[in-house]
Image (cartoon, rainbow, N blue to C red; front, side):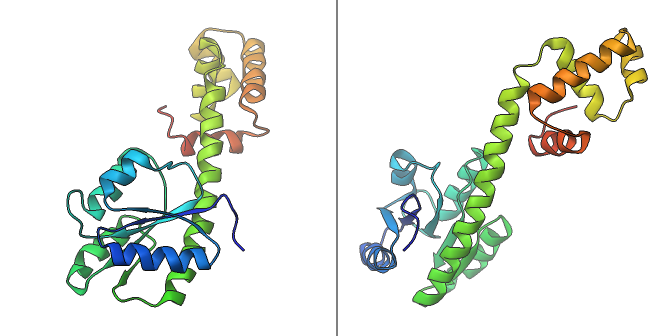
Length: 205
């Protein structure tokens, strides 16, 4: 059985595809939500859960590729498995280059789809862990005082205590105190961890 918190979103304007996929995935133990269009998915689906999207490339209204781009712009990560007709393969290749897990041509093999879903869920868990870590780091950054934030920027830029003290016109001892508070408030034990999280959070230096 699969984790009850995992959900598979099926988005396809063909009712027969939605029904057959829903039956297959529920029989495999997954929670399934189906949508007739990308627009319906965007308006109704909770996109912060662990799972993946099975997405048709060509649909009336917003295409699968359009939905992929919109989710990317909104920093809403959810692994996508595209399903496609033979004539849509060039578009699907582009979709994979932009981060999709894979694409399957209709009719596709059920075993292959279930294997891809397993991979997608694993990747989703990893990405969600990173996103949660980044959100927590950004939240902690907001607890820094203006002076502590100045010291933080200098530290992750590679400056030494003496250099930081000179640039900020403070005593070196005072800089060390600020640096300690920065590390404590941000919940990091080393400079390497601080730099890693700063890069992940894409903080402008």
